[in-house]
Image 1 (tube, rainbow, N blue to C red):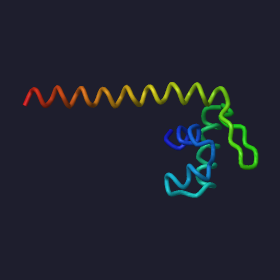
Image 2: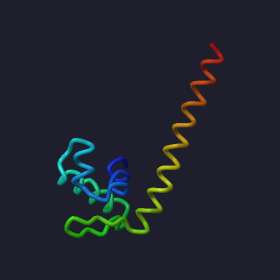
Image 3: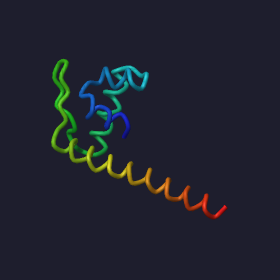
Image 4: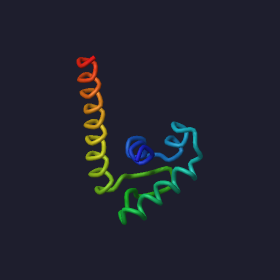
Length: 85
């Protein structure tokens, strides 16, 4: 999930690999595996160009909202716990 979201943002597997301290091949393989599991083409790959598909943009937007929602839930739960103590 994190590699995918960063790839949508950076549009470059090498930059994603540098960000996570992995190899570009590992990032590419991880994204390919995700595409296979979801049965979706997420990126159009060209030399030095990575373009997210419409499916990738939809997933990225939805998943970022979900991650933000989870983060907010955690903050609310901590605040509630702090009040109870």
